[in-house]
Amino acid sequence: MKVVASISQGLEKEGAQELIELGAHAVKASRRHILFEADMACLYRVHLRSRLSFRFLREICRFPCHGPHELYSRVQSEIDWENWLTPQKSFRVDVTGFGEGLSHTHFTALQVKNAIVDLQRERWGLRSRIDLNNPDICFHLHLASNQAFLSVDGSNSSLHKRGYRPAVGIAPIKENLAAGLMRMTGWDGTKNLVDPLCGSGTFLIEAVSILFGIPSGIHRQFLFKNWPDFDISLWDSELKIAKKLKNFDNKLPKIIGCEVDEKIANCAIQNIKDADLEDYIEIINSPFQEYQLPTGLGLLVCNPPYGKRIGDENLLPNLYKELGNYCKNQASGWDLWLLNGNPNLSKYLGMKANKRFQVNNGAIDCRWLNYQIK
Ligand SMILES: C[S@@+](CC[C@H](N)C(=O)[O-])C[C@H]1O[C@@H](n2cnc3c(N)ncnc32)[C@H](O)[C@@H]1O
Image (cartoon, rainbow, N blue to C red):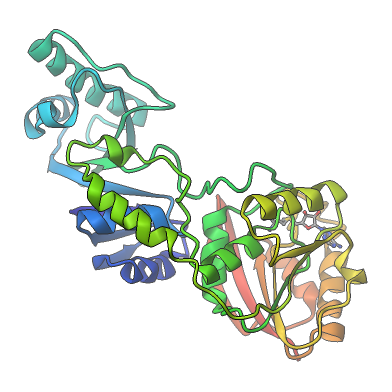
């Protein structure tokens, strides 16, 4: 099967590597997407275990498309609808991209929907219900260069929602972005890990989950169970393997988050409990400036406020100066990894970045900066 993963800009290389580790073939990263080939077991596995991707789309057909009429008739003729969608099943159509006479995704989605339900009515005298929130099947149409790619989405909502984070602070980072950034640090559980501005604790939860091999989708419902070729014994075997993955027996170093805001610190504590990681991660409700780092070496990871969504930009230079001083005074020999969405602020750290990677945090163009603290 041909599959497309969607991913945050900047994580494509790391995401491709993760998919290869999970058994994907012919993996090709392009901007915000990764194309790959998978058998059914691999497709189930990436849904269960990938921590970096937003969603996986399985292509069911592709055809030339030069306008709304061709789209309508090809949707009817190119797919075996008796197999894919009986009138008893509800569905939704998502659209990305544009084509001739198809410049509004909402209009394009209606065109696909009409083609399907008109055909159903003709064939069965009945039609499927549209369910935007909780459909049985979710179709995805992508238009590019006069080609249409029709796929089915294996999950109803984005895979970054793990289920451990009903409680979020202000401007939380998405779980899959935090996972990708943590992978880029190379943290392997042998050194301390501290997030001095931890918010809802996402970096720490994702870091320990990666280390333990906790499957990201173990509590999710997947739409591929409604596909006509769903193979329950294959799925059960992937699920069984995934449940046995928790395999890290070494003693962990200190894994600590500092959060100045009491309410947000409590959110982080709750999230860590919901992720079943309270034996491994500690949250301290204090400004980082007052927190003494544990002995030994380690990594500091954080995304401090950068004024676009939270924080008064005029007060932030001081916060960055204090973070820089904290690193120099307390963390000699440690690494700092900092997600920065405002280049005017990182200079106040007073340190020179050793490595920098461009990543997008939602719509915000950011840099994942690595400092080796002298
Ligand atoms: C952008 S948020 C971090 C989001 C976090 N990565 C998450 O996943 O939720 C920055 C956090 O730093 C906290 N903060 C600001 N100044 C602080 C300080 N001096 N010490 C500790 N935390 C601080 C804020 O309350 C906020 O929760």
